[in-house]
Image (cartoon, rainbow, N blue to C red):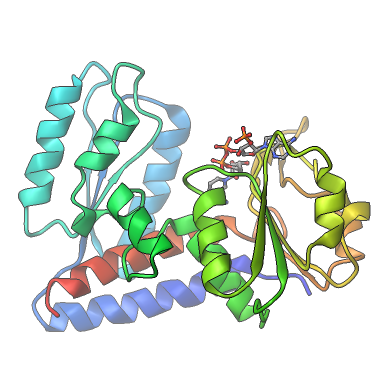
Length: 280
Ligand code: NDP
């Protein structure tokens, strides 16, 4: 089975649109504010896509676009204003930030109650202790894809390749919560092929084109490819050797059209949920 991320993301977005419409009937217009510092070209594209997706789901979106010379103190003051603004339900600071600003300090300044990306340490702690809170969008989207594909995770060996704060670690927490037996591999893992060969579910989040070989995949395994890499021809390729892996996997996500569309969909879902919490 090729897992169709575009179709699942469209369903999530329709659910969010319905939730937003209901909130508006109750007098709440859910709003996401994006802060983009400076002129990173990739960030400009990501933010444009997020704002467009907000509009399609009926969310109010605003963008703050300070110059890259903004000081950390000025950026923190902007975040403090957004934290205090009742019309703002979700705040997202697009990374990377200029080098003179600490990403960690800025992310921790966002109120956990408005943390649309789910990166605040308080919300990360909620994830690991099983409390409801906004969750990192990409791994949250992966969980939805696994659910839609009917994958029963209980007791399965799940391998997460990558241990970043935005994908690998929260992914491992979410798989563990669903009773998988979780292994996390990273750059110091000595025999990745052997780890992959044992896994019933593989989530690859490395950032190296086709580094997970199809021949490593256990027959019948489920393969989720988070990687987004530009090939030599400029085309987007994943971390998994797709054609060879697809011959062995029972279900696999393509790149593009797999995990990618889920990230923005889950960002919208997080924002709508943060707004809903203000009236519960
Ligand atoms: P990071 O660079 O932060 O993390 C990469 C991880 O891969 C690290 O933990 C690193 O290990 C590990 N790694 C590197 N080399 C190897 C290796 N040879 N074997 C095993 N593990 C290795 O990346 P991100 O988590 O931010 O992103 C990962 C990929 O996912 C990227 O391609 C990115 O573009 C994509 N992505 C896609 C999204 C989407 O919406 N589809 C959203 C976010 C990311 P170590 O910690 O030891 O250095």
